[in-house]
Length: 490
Image (cartoon, rainbow, N blue to C red; front, side, top):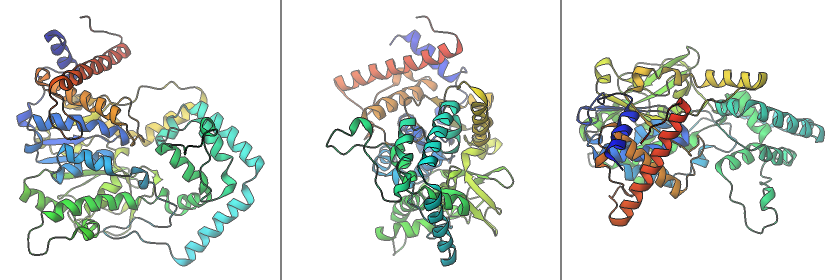
Protein backbone atom coordinates (compact mmCIF):
# COMPACT_ATOMS: atom_id res chain seq x y z
CA UNK A 1 0.00 0.00 0.00
CA UNK A 2 1.45 3.39 -1.06
CA UNK A 3 2.56 5.94 1.53
CA UNK A 4 0.24 8.47 -0.12
CA UNK A 5 -2.79 6.25 0.35
CA UNK A 6 -1.81 5.45 3.93
CA UNK A 7 -1.61 9.19 4.65
CA UNK A 8 -4.98 9.79 2.97
CA UNK A 9 -6.63 6.93 4.85
CA UNK A 10 -5.29 8.16 8.18
CA UNK A 11 -6.59 11.69 7.65
CA UNK A 12 -9.91 10.51 6.23
CA UNK A 13 -10.66 8.10 9.06
CA UNK A 14 -9.70 10.62 11.74
CA UNK A 15 -11.62 13.52 10.18
CA UNK A 16 -9.14 15.74 12.08
CA UNK A 17 -5.38 16.33 11.95
CA UNK A 18 -3.53 15.53 14.15
CA UNK A 19 -5.43 12.94 16.26
CA UNK A 20 -7.32 14.68 19.10
CA UNK A 21 -5.36 12.65 21.62
CA UNK A 22 -2.24 10.43 21.33
CA UNK A 23 -2.53 6.81 22.52
CA UNK A 24 -0.33 7.31 25.59
CA UNK A 25 -2.71 9.96 26.98
CA UNK A 26 -5.94 7.94 26.73
CA UNK A 27 -7.45 7.05 30.10
CA UNK A 28 -11.16 6.66 29.28
CA UNK A 29 -12.94 4.55 26.66
CA UNK A 30 -16.61 4.67 25.59
CA UNK A 31 -18.26 1.81 23.70
CA UNK A 32 -21.38 2.35 21.59
CA UNK A 33 -24.36 -0.01 21.56
CA UNK A 34 -25.23 -2.02 18.47
CA UNK A 35 -26.04 -5.65 19.26
CA UNK A 36 -24.24 -8.13 17.02
CA UNK A 37 -22.41 -5.27 15.31
CA UNK A 38 -20.30 -5.14 18.48
CA UNK A 39 -18.28 -8.03 17.06
CA UNK A 40 -16.37 -5.27 15.25
CA UNK A 41 -14.88 -4.20 18.59
CA UNK A 42 -12.52 -7.17 18.66
CA UNK A 43 -10.10 -5.82 16.06
CA UNK A 44 -10.10 -2.35 17.62
CA UNK A 45 -9.32 -3.84 21.03
CA UNK A 46 -6.39 -5.81 19.58
CA UNK A 47 -5.06 -2.54 18.13
CA UNK A 48 -5.57 -0.62 21.38
CA UNK A 49 -3.82 -3.42 23.25
CA UNK A 50 -0.90 -3.26 20.82
CA UNK A 51 -0.69 0.51 21.37
CA UNK A 52 -0.65 0.05 25.15
CA UNK A 53 -4.01 1.77 25.67
CA UNK A 54 -5.82 -1.06 27.44
CA UNK A 55 -3.19 -1.26 30.18
CA UNK A 56 -3.53 2.42 31.06
CA UNK A 57 -7.33 2.79 31.03
CA UNK A 58 -8.86 4.15 34.24
CA UNK A 59 -12.53 4.15 33.22
CA UNK A 60 -14.55 2.30 30.61
CA UNK A 61 -18.18 3.12 29.78
CA UNK A 62 -20.62 1.18 27.65
CA UNK A 63 -24.18 1.34 26.43
CA UNK A 64 -26.38 -1.60 25.47
CA UNK A 65 -24.15 -4.22 23.78
CA UNK A 66 -21.19 -1.92 24.45
CA UNK A 67 -21.89 -2.34 28.17
CA UNK A 68 -21.14 -6.06 27.84
CA UNK A 69 -17.74 -5.38 26.27
CA UNK A 70 -17.07 -2.68 28.87
CA UNK A 71 -17.80 -5.21 31.63
CA UNK A 72 -15.27 -7.66 30.22
CA UNK A 73 -12.59 -4.95 30.15
CA UNK A 74 -13.30 -3.94 33.75
CA UNK A 75 -12.79 -7.58 34.74
CA UNK A 76 -9.33 -7.57 33.18
CA UNK A 77 -10.18 -9.78 30.20
CA UNK A 78 -7.80 -9.49 27.25
CA UNK A 79 -9.17 -9.34 23.68
CA UNK A 80 -8.51 -13.06 23.09
CA UNK A 81 -10.46 -13.90 26.27
CA UNK A 82 -13.29 -11.66 25.10
CA UNK A 83 -13.38 -13.57 21.82
CA UNK A 84 -13.57 -16.87 23.72
CA UNK A 85 -16.45 -15.53 25.83
CA UNK A 86 -18.37 -14.31 22.77
CA UNK A 87 -17.70 -17.52 20.85
CA UNK A 88 -18.83 -19.77 23.71
CA UNK A 89 -21.94 -17.78 24.69
CA UNK A 90 -25.30 -18.97 23.39
CA UNK A 91 -26.91 -15.61 22.63
CA UNK A 92 -30.10 -17.37 21.52
CA UNK A 93 -30.63 -18.29 25.17
CA UNK A 94 -30.85 -14.58 26.01
CA UNK A 95 -34.32 -14.71 24.44
CA UNK A 96 -35.89 -16.78 27.19
CA UNK A 97 -38.84 -19.14 26.94
CA UNK A 98 -42.20 -17.79 28.03
CA UNK A 99 -42.02 -16.93 31.72
CA UNK A 100 -43.90 -14.93 34.33
CA UNK A 101 -40.56 -14.00 35.94
CA UNK A 102 -39.87 -10.32 36.57
CA UNK A 103 -36.45 -8.65 36.86
CA UNK A 104 -35.20 -8.68 40.46
CA UNK A 105 -31.97 -7.08 41.63
CA UNK A 106 -29.23 -9.29 43.04
CA UNK A 107 -31.33 -12.47 43.21
CA UNK A 108 -33.19 -14.98 41.04
CA UNK A 109 -36.03 -13.24 39.23
CA UNK A 110 -39.33 -13.18 41.11
CA UNK A 111 -42.32 -15.23 39.96
CA UNK A 112 -45.90 -14.10 39.65
CA UNK A 113 -48.38 -15.07 42.31
CA UNK A 114 -50.48 -18.20 41.86
CA UNK A 115 -53.52 -16.07 41.11
CA UNK A 116 -51.72 -14.08 38.44
CA UNK A 117 -50.31 -17.25 36.87
CA UNK A 118 -53.84 -18.60 36.58
CA UNK A 119 -55.04 -15.35 35.03
CA UNK A 120 -52.24 -15.43 32.47
CA UNK A 121 -53.00 -19.02 31.47
CA UNK A 122 -56.70 -18.27 31.19
CA UNK A 123 -56.17 -15.24 28.99
CA UNK A 124 -53.66 -17.03 26.74
CA UNK A 125 -55.96 -20.04 26.37
CA UNK A 126 -58.88 -17.77 25.53
CA UNK A 127 -56.91 -15.95 22.85
CA UNK A 128 -55.72 -19.20 21.33
CA UNK A 129 -59.15 -20.86 21.26
CA UNK A 130 -61.28 -17.91 20.15
CA UNK A 131 -59.12 -15.71 17.95
CA UNK A 132 -56.99 -18.06 15.90
CA UNK A 133 -58.72 -19.25 12.76
CA UNK A 134 -58.22 -19.35 9.02
CA UNK A 135 -59.72 -15.91 8.43
CA UNK A 136 -57.53 -14.27 11.05
CA UNK A 137 -54.46 -16.10 9.76
CA UNK A 138 -55.10 -14.88 6.22
CA UNK A 139 -55.68 -11.35 7.48
CA UNK A 140 -52.53 -11.36 9.55
CA UNK A 141 -50.52 -12.62 6.62
CA UNK A 142 -51.76 -9.85 4.32
CA UNK A 143 -51.27 -7.22 7.01
CA UNK A 144 -47.76 -8.44 7.74
CA UNK A 145 -46.86 -8.40 4.04
CA UNK A 146 -48.16 -4.85 3.57
CA UNK A 147 -46.46 -3.65 6.76
CA UNK A 148 -43.12 -5.17 5.81
CA UNK A 149 -43.25 -3.66 2.32
CA UNK A 150 -44.12 -0.21 3.65
CA UNK A 151 -42.02 0.01 6.77
CA UNK A 152 -38.82 -0.98 4.98
CA UNK A 153 -37.65 -2.67 8.20
CA UNK A 154 -37.34 0.65 10.06
CA UNK A 155 -40.16 0.27 12.59
CA UNK A 156 -39.38 -3.40 13.18
CA UNK A 157 -35.70 -2.65 13.76
CA UNK A 158 -36.63 0.13 16.15
CA UNK A 159 -38.92 -2.05 18.24
CA UNK A 160 -37.21 -5.42 18.13
CA UNK A 161 -34.22 -5.08 15.77
CA UNK A 162 -35.30 -8.22 13.94
CA UNK A 163 -34.97 -8.49 10.16
CA UNK A 164 -37.06 -11.40 8.90
CA UNK A 165 -38.13 -12.22 5.38
CA UNK A 166 -41.82 -11.97 4.52
CA UNK A 167 -41.68 -15.64 3.52
CA UNK A 168 -40.62 -16.55 7.07
CA UNK A 169 -43.57 -14.60 8.46
CA UNK A 170 -45.96 -16.45 6.18
CA UNK A 171 -44.72 -19.90 7.21
CA UNK A 172 -44.87 -19.09 10.90
CA UNK A 173 -48.28 -17.40 10.88
CA UNK A 174 -49.79 -20.44 9.20
CA UNK A 175 -48.85 -22.56 12.20
CA UNK A 176 -50.00 -20.25 15.00
CA UNK A 177 -52.88 -22.55 15.90
CA UNK A 178 -50.47 -25.39 16.72
CA UNK A 179 -49.54 -23.93 20.09
CA UNK A 180 -46.33 -24.10 22.16
CA UNK A 181 -43.80 -26.79 21.32
CA UNK A 182 -45.10 -27.45 17.84
CA UNK A 183 -41.64 -27.16 16.32
CA UNK A 184 -40.56 -25.16 13.30
CA UNK A 185 -41.42 -26.50 9.83
CA UNK A 186 -38.67 -26.80 7.25
CA UNK A 187 -38.14 -23.79 5.01
CA UNK A 188 -39.42 -24.20 1.43
CA UNK A 189 -35.99 -24.67 -0.14
CA UNK A 190 -35.14 -27.30 2.46
CA UNK A 191 -38.39 -29.25 2.45
CA UNK A 192 -37.21 -31.84 -0.05
CA UNK A 193 -34.06 -32.73 1.86
CA UNK A 194 -33.56 -35.11 4.75
CA UNK A 195 -31.16 -32.79 6.57
CA UNK A 196 -32.26 -30.79 9.58
CA UNK A 197 -32.36 -27.14 8.46
CA UNK A 198 -29.90 -24.80 10.13
CA UNK A 199 -31.89 -21.85 11.43
CA UNK A 200 -30.47 -18.41 12.08
CA UNK A 201 -31.03 -16.69 15.39
CA UNK A 202 -33.71 -14.55 13.74
CA UNK A 203 -35.54 -17.62 12.47
CA UNK A 204 -35.29 -19.36 15.84
CA UNK A 205 -36.66 -16.29 17.56
CA UNK A 206 -39.53 -15.94 15.13
CA UNK A 207 -40.40 -19.62 15.53
CA UNK A 208 -40.41 -19.23 19.32
CA UNK A 209 -42.72 -16.22 19.14
CA UNK A 210 -45.01 -17.96 16.66
CA UNK A 211 -45.26 -21.06 18.85
CA UNK A 212 -46.30 -19.15 21.96
CA UNK A 213 -47.55 -15.77 20.80
CA UNK A 214 -50.61 -15.64 23.12
CA UNK A 215 -48.36 -16.45 26.10
CA UNK A 216 -45.79 -13.86 25.06
CA UNK A 217 -48.68 -11.46 24.64
CA UNK A 218 -49.54 -11.88 28.31
CA UNK A 219 -45.91 -11.06 29.16
CA UNK A 220 -46.30 -7.80 27.26
CA UNK A 221 -49.57 -7.02 29.01
CA UNK A 222 -48.41 -7.86 32.54
CA UNK A 223 -44.65 -7.18 32.40
CA UNK A 224 -44.17 -4.72 29.49
CA UNK A 225 -41.76 -7.03 27.67
CA UNK A 226 -41.55 -10.34 25.81
CA UNK A 227 -38.44 -11.90 27.37
CA UNK A 228 -37.36 -11.84 31.01
CA UNK A 229 -33.65 -11.59 30.18
CA UNK A 230 -32.75 -13.62 33.28
CA UNK A 231 -30.41 -15.88 31.32
CA UNK A 232 -28.53 -12.81 30.08
CA UNK A 233 -28.31 -11.33 33.58
CA UNK A 234 -27.02 -14.60 35.02
CA UNK A 235 -24.49 -14.91 32.19
CA UNK A 236 -23.05 -11.54 33.24
CA UNK A 237 -23.19 -12.58 36.89
CA UNK A 238 -21.31 -15.79 36.11
CA UNK A 239 -18.67 -13.81 34.25
CA UNK A 240 -18.26 -11.48 37.22
CA UNK A 241 -18.12 -14.35 39.68
CA UNK A 242 -15.56 -16.26 37.62
CA UNK A 243 -13.14 -13.33 37.29
CA UNK A 244 -13.77 -11.22 40.37
CA UNK A 245 -14.15 -14.36 42.47
CA UNK A 246 -10.93 -16.08 41.47
CA UNK A 247 -8.99 -12.92 42.38
CA UNK A 248 -10.79 -12.55 45.70
CA UNK A 249 -8.31 -12.47 48.57
CA UNK A 250 -8.79 -14.29 51.85
CA UNK A 251 -9.17 -17.91 52.92
CA UNK A 252 -12.53 -18.50 51.19
CA UNK A 253 -12.28 -17.92 47.42
CA UNK A 254 -15.56 -18.25 45.56
CA UNK A 255 -16.17 -21.83 44.36
CA UNK A 256 -16.78 -22.00 40.61
CA UNK A 257 -20.15 -23.65 41.23
CA UNK A 258 -21.27 -20.55 43.13
CA UNK A 259 -19.85 -18.03 40.64
CA UNK A 260 -23.25 -16.97 39.30
CA UNK A 261 -24.86 -16.58 42.73
CA UNK A 262 -21.84 -14.64 43.94
CA UNK A 263 -21.73 -12.52 40.77
CA UNK A 264 -25.33 -11.43 41.28
CA UNK A 265 -24.36 -9.82 44.57
CA UNK A 266 -21.34 -7.83 43.34
CA UNK A 267 -22.15 -4.13 43.47
CA UNK A 268 -20.47 -1.22 41.75
CA UNK A 269 -18.75 -0.27 45.00
CA UNK A 270 -17.29 -3.77 45.29
CA UNK A 271 -16.25 -3.84 41.64
CA UNK A 272 -14.62 -0.41 41.93
CA UNK A 273 -12.62 -1.61 44.92
CA UNK A 274 -11.57 -4.70 42.98
CA UNK A 275 -10.57 -2.59 39.96
CA UNK A 276 -8.52 -0.28 42.16
CA UNK A 277 -6.67 -3.21 43.71
CA UNK A 278 -6.08 -4.93 40.38
CA UNK A 279 -5.38 -1.66 38.50
CA UNK A 280 -8.22 -2.22 36.07
CA UNK A 281 -10.58 0.36 34.53
CA UNK A 282 -13.68 1.17 36.56
CA UNK A 283 -17.01 0.44 34.92
CA UNK A 284 -19.86 2.77 33.99
CA UNK A 285 -22.93 1.72 32.03
CA UNK A 286 -26.00 3.59 30.86
CA UNK A 287 -29.68 2.92 31.37
CA UNK A 288 -32.74 4.83 30.17
CA UNK A 289 -35.38 5.80 32.74
CA UNK A 290 -38.67 6.18 30.91
CA UNK A 291 -40.73 8.02 33.55
CA UNK A 292 -38.35 10.98 33.59
CA UNK A 293 -37.05 10.38 30.04
CA UNK A 294 -33.49 10.67 31.31
CA UNK A 295 -30.30 8.73 30.83
CA UNK A 296 -28.95 7.10 33.99
CA UNK A 297 -25.26 6.41 34.58
CA UNK A 298 -24.67 3.33 36.76
CA UNK A 299 -21.27 3.54 38.46
CA UNK A 300 -19.43 3.28 41.75
CA UNK A 301 -20.12 6.99 42.29
CA UNK A 302 -23.77 7.27 41.29
CA UNK A 303 -25.12 3.81 42.24
CA UNK A 304 -22.50 2.13 44.48
CA UNK A 305 -24.98 -0.33 46.02
CA UNK A 306 -26.61 -1.51 42.80
CA UNK A 307 -25.62 -4.95 41.42
CA UNK A 308 -23.37 -4.71 38.36
CA UNK A 309 -24.92 -7.65 36.49
CA UNK A 310 -28.38 -6.10 36.77
CA UNK A 311 -27.10 -2.76 35.47
CA UNK A 312 -25.58 -4.45 32.40
CA UNK A 313 -28.85 -6.34 31.87
CA UNK A 314 -30.73 -3.01 32.04
CA UNK A 315 -28.34 -1.44 29.54
CA UNK A 316 -28.93 -4.19 26.95
CA UNK A 317 -32.69 -4.44 27.60
CA UNK A 318 -34.20 -3.40 24.27
CA UNK A 319 -37.71 -2.00 24.97
CA UNK A 320 -40.59 -4.41 24.31
CA UNK A 321 -38.16 -7.24 23.55
CA UNK A 322 -37.05 -7.36 27.20
CA UNK A 323 -38.99 -6.74 30.38
CA UNK A 324 -37.91 -3.47 31.99
CA UNK A 325 -36.56 -3.15 35.52
CA UNK A 326 -39.20 -1.42 37.61
CA UNK A 327 -37.68 0.13 40.74
CA UNK A 328 -40.44 1.07 43.20
CA UNK A 329 -38.32 1.93 46.26
CA UNK A 330 -34.80 3.25 46.63
CA UNK A 331 -32.10 3.95 49.20
CA UNK A 332 -28.72 5.63 49.30
CA UNK A 333 -26.43 4.35 46.60
CA UNK A 334 -29.32 3.07 44.48
CA UNK A 335 -30.89 4.50 41.31
CA UNK A 336 -34.07 6.61 41.61
CA UNK A 337 -37.46 4.93 41.32
CA UNK A 338 -38.58 4.41 37.76
CA UNK A 339 -38.79 2.09 34.77
CA UNK A 340 -35.39 1.26 33.25
CA UNK A 341 -34.66 -0.01 29.74
CA UNK A 342 -31.84 -0.14 27.18
CA UNK A 343 -29.20 2.53 27.77
CA UNK A 344 -28.98 3.15 24.03
CA UNK A 345 -32.45 4.71 23.96
CA UNK A 346 -31.19 8.00 25.40
CA UNK A 347 -27.39 7.65 25.26
CA UNK A 348 -26.01 5.14 22.78
CA UNK A 349 -22.42 6.39 22.91
CA UNK A 350 -21.76 7.19 26.60
CA UNK A 351 -19.10 9.87 26.32
CA UNK A 352 -21.39 11.78 28.69
CA UNK A 353 -20.46 9.26 31.39
CA UNK A 354 -17.14 11.09 31.81
CA UNK A 355 -16.54 14.34 33.68
CA UNK A 356 -15.22 17.35 31.77
CA UNK A 357 -11.72 16.57 32.96
CA UNK A 358 -12.00 12.87 32.06
CA UNK A 359 -13.38 13.78 28.63
CA UNK A 360 -10.05 15.33 27.69
CA UNK A 361 -8.48 11.87 27.94
CA UNK A 362 -11.36 9.92 26.38
CA UNK A 363 -12.05 8.31 23.02
CA UNK A 364 -15.06 6.38 21.77
CA UNK A 365 -15.45 3.31 19.60
CA UNK A 366 -18.42 3.88 17.36
CA UNK A 367 -20.23 1.22 15.36
CA UNK A 368 -20.99 2.65 11.94
CA UNK A 369 -24.67 3.54 11.72
CA UNK A 370 -26.87 2.17 8.95
CA UNK A 371 -27.33 4.08 5.74
CA UNK A 372 -30.33 6.40 5.48
CA UNK A 373 -33.46 4.57 4.35
CA UNK A 374 -36.03 6.06 1.93
CA UNK A 375 -39.55 6.63 3.22
CA UNK A 376 -42.52 5.40 1.22
CA UNK A 377 -45.99 6.41 2.31
CA UNK A 378 -47.51 6.97 5.72
CA UNK A 379 -46.42 3.66 7.27
CA UNK A 380 -42.82 4.31 6.28
CA UNK A 381 -43.13 7.83 7.71
CA UNK A 382 -44.56 6.43 10.95
CA UNK A 383 -41.78 3.83 11.11
CA UNK A 384 -39.12 6.53 10.76
CA UNK A 385 -40.69 8.50 13.64
CA UNK A 386 -40.79 5.38 15.82
CA UNK A 387 -37.19 4.54 14.99
CA UNK A 388 -36.11 8.08 15.82
CA UNK A 389 -37.99 8.00 19.11
CA UNK A 390 -36.67 4.61 20.20
CA UNK A 391 -33.11 5.23 18.99
CA UNK A 392 -32.85 8.85 20.13
CA UNK A 393 -29.54 7.99 21.81
CA UNK A 394 -27.79 8.44 18.46
CA UNK A 395 -28.69 12.14 18.55
CA UNK A 396 -26.23 12.71 21.43
CA UNK A 397 -23.30 12.03 19.08
CA UNK A 398 -22.34 15.57 18.05
CA UNK A 399 -19.81 16.56 15.40
CA UNK A 400 -17.31 17.54 18.09
CA UNK A 401 -17.71 14.20 19.86
CA UNK A 402 -17.34 12.38 16.57
CA UNK A 403 -13.78 13.68 16.32
CA UNK A 404 -12.97 11.63 19.40
CA UNK A 405 -14.53 8.51 17.94
CA UNK A 406 -13.02 5.71 15.89
CA UNK A 407 -15.73 4.77 13.41
CA UNK A 408 -15.73 1.04 12.77
CA UNK A 409 -17.33 -0.17 9.56
CA UNK A 410 -19.57 -3.01 10.73
CA UNK A 411 -20.63 -4.42 7.34
CA UNK A 412 -21.86 -7.14 6.94
CA UNK A 413 -22.69 -7.52 10.66
CA UNK A 414 -26.30 -7.09 11.82
CA UNK A 415 -27.87 -5.98 15.07
CA UNK A 416 -29.17 -9.48 15.83
CA UNK A 417 -26.40 -11.24 13.93
CA UNK A 418 -24.67 -12.74 16.96
CA UNK A 419 -23.92 -15.91 14.99
CA UNK A 420 -21.01 -14.69 12.87
CA UNK A 421 -19.00 -17.01 10.63
CA UNK A 422 -15.27 -17.34 11.23
CA UNK A 423 -14.50 -15.87 7.80
CA UNK A 424 -16.69 -12.81 8.43
CA UNK A 425 -15.24 -12.23 11.89
CA UNK A 426 -11.72 -12.61 10.49
CA UNK A 427 -12.42 -9.93 7.87
CA UNK A 428 -14.19 -7.52 10.23
CA UNK A 429 -11.49 -7.93 12.91
CA UNK A 430 -8.69 -7.15 10.44
CA UNK A 431 -10.53 -4.09 9.13
CA UNK A 432 -11.26 -2.75 12.62
CA UNK A 433 -7.68 -3.32 13.72
CA UNK A 434 -6.34 -1.48 10.68
CA UNK A 435 -8.87 1.35 11.05
CA UNK A 436 -7.82 1.90 14.66
CA UNK A 437 -4.12 1.95 13.80
CA UNK A 438 -4.79 4.46 11.01
CA UNK A 439 -6.76 6.71 13.36
CA UNK A 440 -3.63 7.18 15.44
CA UNK A 441 -1.39 7.64 12.40
CA UNK A 442 0.16 4.20 12.79
CA UNK A 443 -0.97 2.57 9.56
CA UNK A 444 2.61 1.67 8.69
CA UNK A 445 2.84 -0.34 11.92
CA UNK A 446 -0.25 -2.46 11.21
CA UNK A 447 0.48 -6.15 11.83
CA UNK A 448 -2.46 -8.57 11.35
CA UNK A 449 -3.22 -11.00 14.17
CA UNK A 450 -4.99 -14.32 14.57
CA UNK A 451 -8.43 -13.08 15.67
CA UNK A 452 -8.90 -16.09 17.99
CA UNK A 453 -5.68 -15.67 19.97
CA UNK A 454 -4.27 -12.23 19.22
CA UNK A 455 -0.94 -13.75 18.15
CA UNK A 456 0.76 -11.92 15.23
CA UNK A 457 0.49 -13.76 11.93
CA UNK A 458 3.73 -14.75 10.23
CA UNK A 459 4.99 -15.18 6.66
CA UNK A 460 2.51 -15.67 3.85
CA UNK A 461 -0.43 -15.71 6.24
CA UNK A 462 0.48 -12.21 7.44
CA UNK A 463 0.98 -10.94 3.88
CA UNK A 464 -2.35 -12.34 2.69
CA UNK A 465 -4.20 -11.00 5.72
CA UNK A 466 -2.66 -7.55 5.32
CA UNK A 467 -3.62 -7.36 1.63
CA UNK A 468 -7.16 -8.46 2.45
CA UNK A 469 -7.49 -5.85 5.22
CA UNK A 470 -6.25 -3.00 3.02
CA UNK A 471 -8.51 -4.03 0.13
CA UNK A 472 -11.49 -4.34 2.48
CA UNK A 473 -10.79 -0.94 4.03
CA UNK A 474 -10.28 0.72 0.65
CA UNK A 475 -13.70 -0.53 -0.47
CA UNK A 476 -15.22 0.73 2.78
CA UNK A 477 -13.72 4.20 2.28
CA UNK A 478 -14.88 4.35 -1.34
CA UNK A 479 -18.40 3.41 -0.29
CA UNK A 480 -18.41 6.23 2.26
CA UNK A 481 -17.00 8.71 -0.29
CA UNK A 482 -19.53 7.79 -2.95
CA UNK A 483 -22.32 8.38 -0.46
CA UNK A 484 -20.79 11.83 0.20
CA UNK A 485 -20.21 12.54 -3.51
CA UNK A 486 -16.40 12.47 -3.60
CA UNK A 487 -13.76 9.85 -4.37
CA UNK A 488 -10.02 9.74 -3.66
CA UNK A 489 -7.94 9.79 -6.83
CA UNK A 490 -4.71 7.78 -6.64
